Image (cartoon, rainbow, N blue to C red; front, side, top):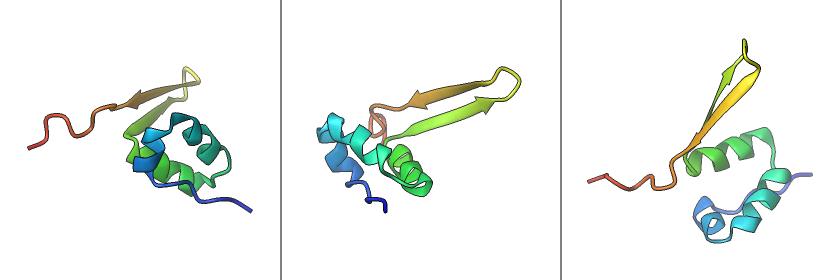
Length: 63
């Protein structure tokens, strides 16, 4: 049984809840959380590496 993660907006206010929510989430729930937080990952198979980027201020610069 999995638990749905809290809303991303609420999670950003309480950082310790992010790890808890992600730990118990399904892959689809994790993708939703990461997407809502602006986290992106790119896998480089030749290097066996994942490059992860996050936009901490996604609304900055939007008009």
